[in-house]
Image 1 (cartoon, rainbow, N blue to C red):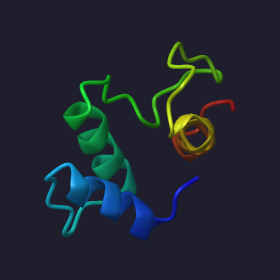
Image 2: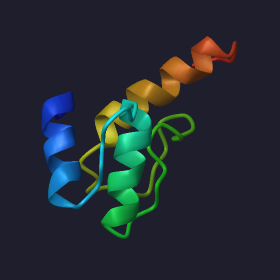
Image 3: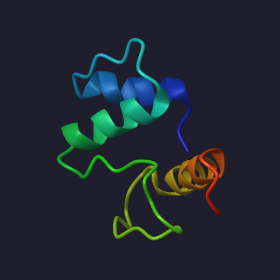
Image 4: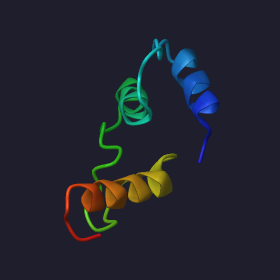
Length: 74
Protein backbone atom coordinates (compact mmCIF):
# COMPACT_ATOMS: atom_id res chain seq x y z
CA UNK A 1 0.00 0.00 0.00
CA UNK A 2 1.34 3.41 -0.86
CA UNK A 3 2.40 5.76 1.93
CA UNK A 4 0.55 9.05 2.49
CA UNK A 5 3.37 10.86 0.68
CA UNK A 6 2.95 8.55 -2.31
CA UNK A 7 -0.83 9.00 -2.19
CA UNK A 8 -0.38 12.78 -2.15
CA UNK A 9 2.05 12.51 -5.10
CA UNK A 10 -0.55 10.52 -7.08
CA UNK A 11 -3.17 13.14 -6.22
CA UNK A 12 -0.88 15.98 -7.30
CA UNK A 13 -0.25 14.25 -10.65
CA UNK A 14 -4.03 14.14 -11.17
CA UNK A 15 -4.44 17.82 -10.28
CA UNK A 16 -6.02 17.16 -6.88
CA UNK A 17 -5.21 19.59 -4.07
CA UNK A 18 -4.61 17.28 -1.14
CA UNK A 19 -4.01 19.77 1.67
CA UNK A 20 -6.00 18.89 4.78
CA UNK A 21 -7.57 15.81 3.19
CA UNK A 22 -7.73 12.66 5.26
CA UNK A 23 -6.52 9.41 3.67
CA UNK A 24 -9.99 8.06 2.82
CA UNK A 25 -11.18 11.35 1.33
CA UNK A 26 -8.00 11.69 -0.72
CA UNK A 27 -8.13 8.15 -2.10
CA UNK A 28 -11.78 8.61 -3.05
CA UNK A 29 -10.88 11.86 -4.86
CA UNK A 30 -8.17 9.96 -6.76
CA UNK A 31 -10.65 7.21 -7.64
CA UNK A 32 -13.09 9.81 -9.03
CA UNK A 33 -10.35 11.60 -10.99
CA UNK A 34 -9.38 8.27 -12.56
CA UNK A 35 -13.00 7.61 -13.57
CA UNK A 36 -13.48 4.81 -11.05
CA UNK A 37 -16.01 4.26 -8.29
CA UNK A 38 -15.12 6.33 -5.22
CA UNK A 39 -15.71 3.40 -2.92
CA UNK A 40 -12.54 3.20 -0.79
CA UNK A 41 -13.27 1.79 2.66
CA UNK A 42 -16.79 0.61 1.85
CA UNK A 43 -16.20 -3.05 0.97
CA UNK A 44 -18.61 -5.25 2.89
CA UNK A 45 -17.28 -8.59 4.11
CA UNK A 46 -14.20 -8.20 1.90
CA UNK A 47 -16.30 -8.39 -1.25
CA UNK A 48 -15.34 -6.08 -4.10
CA UNK A 49 -15.65 -6.30 -7.87
CA UNK A 50 -12.69 -3.97 -8.47
CA UNK A 51 -10.04 -6.69 -8.81
CA UNK A 52 -7.25 -4.42 -10.15
CA UNK A 53 -7.73 -1.56 -7.70
CA UNK A 54 -4.49 -0.18 -6.25
CA UNK A 55 -6.24 0.41 -2.92
CA UNK A 56 -7.94 -3.00 -2.61
CA UNK A 57 -6.05 -4.57 0.33
CA UNK A 58 -5.93 -1.36 2.35
CA UNK A 59 -9.61 -0.82 1.58
CA UNK A 60 -10.50 -4.16 3.15
CA UNK A 61 -8.51 -3.29 6.28
CA UNK A 62 -10.20 0.11 6.56
CA UNK A 63 -13.67 -1.40 5.99
CA UNK A 64 -13.19 -3.95 8.76
CA UNK A 65 -11.78 -1.29 11.12
CA UNK A 66 -14.82 0.94 10.44
CA UNK A 67 -17.22 -1.94 11.15
CA UNK A 68 -15.48 -2.60 14.46
CA UNK A 69 -15.47 1.13 15.33
CA UNK A 70 -19.24 1.45 14.87
CA UNK A 71 -19.91 -1.75 16.77
CA UNK A 72 -20.57 -4.19 13.98
CA UNK A 73 -19.02 -7.55 13.37
CA UNK A 74 -15.85 -7.69 11.25
